[in-house]
Image (cartoon, rainbow, N blue to C red; front, side):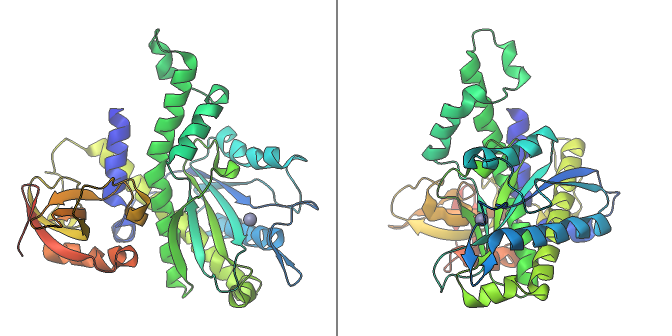
Length: 372
Ligand SMILES: [Zn+2]
């Protein structure tokens, strides 16, 4: 559990600064394994279908480009494909979906990326990164499925632990530790998408338990590249430039995600329990979720009552916001990050305002908001 907590803390700390770290990162890259999953496939599963274009074809084309770009730019990343042709993985639809994460589990993958194009209204548009959320639906599904999941060996040490309880606990803790990584990866791709001038709508919680993400042992998400129901998105996704852009954004997102992961791992290895090994420059970028000291934070919203930080109203900051007490009627201030300087907090404000347009930088001391 300690390892999990450490992993979460590290993931949270690095969540927003992946690029800044990656820019200064110089080391030989570690070997990684990625499973790319071009959604749908075969005669019975075309996915969305618009103006004669089939989603399965777009998904496959872009996925193959991602594979080739990774082979060229990042040979340390081994890529497996759930399909590299227009085929289905199983006649049964549920089984077909389950085969996809299963490949990632069987290969001991570090990351699973399911590539899709969306269908919706004609006005919906943009790239979305969909993550499995940790709500009741996912939890009860996990409970139902847990007898068939692999339980971690550690639990066998506890003799009075029932096997199904161990499997459930194991599956839940895996979901929890993957969650910040999923979001970090989603954001990493999102930054690359934005860089190429295409709309990124954010990292979104799945509204149901997607079989294609379940049960997945490594981090993994669904990328919806755009809306086939939207004429502009469709034209882009079916153009050579659009497909190249998408593939470059996804492959660069994968590369920069792994750079951040490597940093986190190296930090965990070198962690002496103090922050002595940080240079001043690192400190500027590194922030922990502990408002007991003194510094600056980004106030996302305030409320007149205490809120559950895992509630959907926290949007992208679900589970990431922390409560810092202020004064007045709306004394419950929900904040993100602890920064040593106002400038450091300011540099992340634009990100926060994507979800909370009224977010501001504020100062805290000993767990309380103090005036700037
Ligand atoms: Zn799809």
